[in-house]
Image (cartoon, rainbow, N blue to C red; front, top):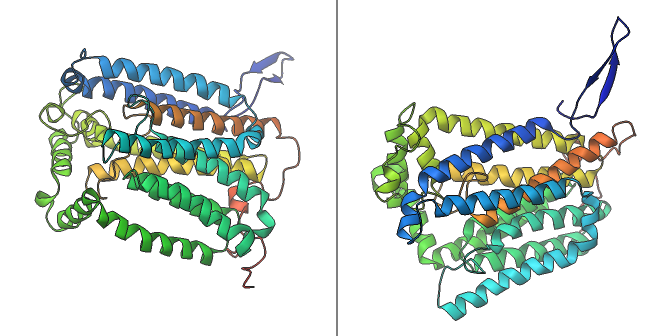
Amino acid sequence: MGQGTFVTKSNTSGRKSTTLRLPFDVPMLLVVIILLVIGLLMVFSASWDLSILMGKSPTYIFSRQILWVLLGVVVAVIASFVDYHIYQKILVPMWLGTLGLLFAVLIVNQTSGSDVARMLVGNSIQPSELAKAVIIIYLSFWLHRRMDSLNDVQIAYIPLVIILGVTFGLIMLQRDLSAALTVLLIGGILFFLAGGNWKIIMLVIVFAIIVGLPLIYIYPKGRVRIDSYITSLNNPLESSYHIQRSLEAVIKGGWFGVGIGQADTKSTGLPLAPTDTIFAVLAEETGILGGAVMVILFSLFIWRGLVIARRAPDQLGSLLAFGLTAWIGIEAMMNMAVVVGLLPFTGNALPFISAGGSSMVVTLTSIGIIMNISRMSNKGKSTERSPNRAVVDLRGRNGRGSVSRFNRS
């Protein structure tokens, strides 16, 4: 479904008919296009006041967002035609370069005196967004090369902890808790799908909790967010100002919304309306039904990503497609859950929708890689595929890893 090339068929009258089938996943492409269109529409609606407050023209943020989308689309198209196996040649420089950017943010913080700066080059580049995609690509190749020794402590477990720990630590030093936790979560999922022992994964999770919780409470904002979230579970009226205004927007929207461009919460103090809380603006202007459509669209996106992962020509493609899809899906669900008070405020963007260059370009580049995996699986349809090709095949029928047991020596 959704993949193919030109196909010629003969009918009963002897005439030949030609059917055009695009060489990549069409449903996935359509969902991404719809999300991008909705995103531009919502950024246009939500960004006027902030643009004016910045001393710019009312369409300043919207105009920049169009440029970021166009740049992301160009990069995505290029990535869709680049064989994903080629990334192995630049794997180490890509990861080291990303760590360098994360470290550079810390240097910028020190020189500027800022406690929360996460951007470089005039607030145009956010390395933590790049780190999420890069760690998925790096770990997919790394795990693929170590399929037969994933449960060996010295060969796989300790290096994996170092890879995730260094990335996690550099992001946490930027006070970006959501990005740091996303890196750990995706790393654990990929390790499990590649055949890693679930006991090792549980050890990593427990270690992350033991280390992560104190770090959250060391930072004042993290402590405030957790305390506010716990309080809001008992009484939503005592939740943080950010969540109160988000819930206000959702309630004002009702079932059908107040109309595109008619929301007033974005103009009366809703924090970060074009970015982190843009889903609240969407819910106010399109109602609960509009919010439900967004959930459905992202659910369809996750479904098609899993289909591409299952059909991938090899296990590497499966890990890449699943990892990138899971990351984008988790980001989306976290953002929407935060707006309605189901999760503590995390500060992550809504993929394809929120204003922001780093998130948009990195996300669309990831879509290009997923599309390339789709193209490669379509090209290799007629050839026999590896028994370890699909995500559903990465674990044994009994749920255990397909590699050797945990090495206790």
